[in-house]
Length: 152
Length: 152
DNA sequence: TGAACTGCGACAAAAATAGTCCTATACTGA
DNA sequence: TCAGTATAGGACTATTTTTGTCGCAGTTCA
Image (cartoon, rainbow over all chains, first blue to last red; front, side, top):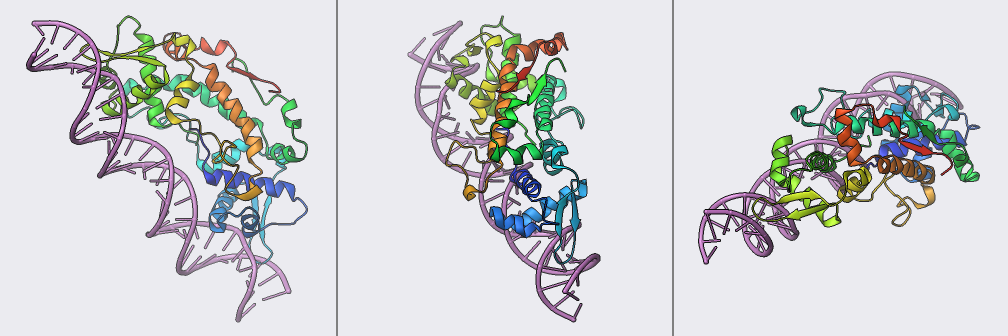
């Protein structure tokens, strides 16, 4: 339930990798794919999408590759996931497109929409920087409130 | 991204329906399926599973059907979803089974595990009763904190 | 110019979901 | 006690989503 696609996983891993190697001018998709043992071509597509959305800057040609276009601290997990998996959300039919295929029957949607926002909030509150930092200083991140949802 | 399966949707809808009809001694799967225009047999299976898990009580034979085994207020969305979609979570490989197929590469998992818990918290904090109530007195539910995640 | 890249579109393969069918069993009421 | 209505559940098929591959065009750099 509620699982991320592998593409989103790959995207997060790649951004984390880039966040941890700010020194390297640019890193190729292949470099990252090799490091994590994931299909290079797939990762390439993911990175291309992230570039298109503006989270990465690409650099074609020899010694080319990708780099973060912004500070890791300012890139949220939400942005990454949204860019890769799209805006779709919790319930099959979110009120983006025409309500529900199932007539006016979907009475469950509105309550879930709020849950939806809560989850988005959680995802927005965690940055690539947080994820990268986590490893070395585990436990530090939790000190600050991950998310605070009162009222809304 | 992060969307519920239809089965889970159906389950939530059914429980909500039952919560809204406490008068009826028991409601058949067909009744609910007809009301919402969903496949009866599929809903039947969902309800059977919810019964097995103990969220519903079933009653075979004529005029049979299902009823909540507990107060709607004490049944969380989390329980329902967990019963139907299983315990799987956010990231492909949660540290339930052996860490990751991808060697020690999955550095992304631990940070996401925390996100995972946050989401579970959100889901646990909303009850079937909340969802049923929502329609009539929309907006009331939001007044109470949906979830409060500080530190953890 | 050629090697090492990114950028895309079209597929193919695999896995998860959704939905159907069929049979067995339980209970109710006439 | 029999007929009708329900649940219980296994097996199977269909559909959709996800994952991964291939091939080719454009870029950059030495």
